[in-house]
Image (cartoon, rainbow, N blue to C red):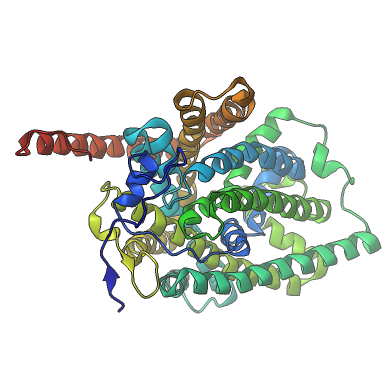
Length: 486
């Protein structure tokens, strides 16, 4: 095992949000508390991590559910969802320019809203970053088990965790290169599906009208589309992970901001194209899927089978198995950076604020994230209802963090910096629209997700209160009687 580097103050000071190079600013204080990560990721690497986490064929697993919910207007659902998530992407782009550091929304909320809000944002994002990889690993285990039934799905799930964790520990560049190959494979399979679907449409025609994926079956329903959008936005969770690698990206915050926006647009186009073609070819109508919930999970695979045969169904399943594992790889890497940043700021145990001298990655933070993810994924894989339990709670943490992100833009640019009137649209109206979308999606979330998210928030607030009490006692007991800076 490579030795770990002890935290040292960065030379020359870190740029703080005001653009200076001192360490008095909030962002600067964060970096001053620990070592920097290596800047080695290119623009392409950032896009790879973002698309890996999202997965180019993310709609496959929830295609049937969204068809039923939207009354057949699934492509419109993804168009609206892309626009809705664009507000969040824009807020990320604003904040990553002023704080290009690991920690993502944890760092942004700190400098925009204060220490307490920063901790809450990081705490809620932690729930998302630790459990979304577990869901992805479980998807991989289920898909591999369907291909090789003799091996139990929990064994496949655990194997996926071990392999991707080793790649993450090897180094961010190695993981990015392997991830690029996997992403290329996923896109190639998607291209095969698109070509096969177009061929079938050209030779045999569509199962339903050409505009149905945009207008719905039997008439358009605004409420049905919006209800489906609240589920569809979950397909995009992960594009924000790009911001977690800001400290390792060459080119600074502007390149990361461009990567966040680019990743969202690319994902939106891929989602719209595949769902449009699948909706035209689906053997079951939206009404039939709504009447048979058990058929919803396999709806996309059934469409591939009906369109081109079993070979395409198996190809899509294999791609989903491998792609899900590497989506989890990107999620695990982002989780490690979040834990590292919070530990570097002394909000989590300091042992996780160390960077491996050989690989340049936060090894202990990555291992901590991997252990939690492994336990959650294997537990779910051994239960018949495990996927339902996990998938129902992964979204609230991320959405709460998104809400604090939008508030951070307003807090930093408008309230703290006293932005000029011309900044109202960029730094007030857009974040408020994004916040409204987040609130609407949380309201539409399942009761289980709301309860778990609320409980996790309460625990976080208790931890925050305990930290404040500890620091207050430390400050009053110091020999100089001065006030502790941390």
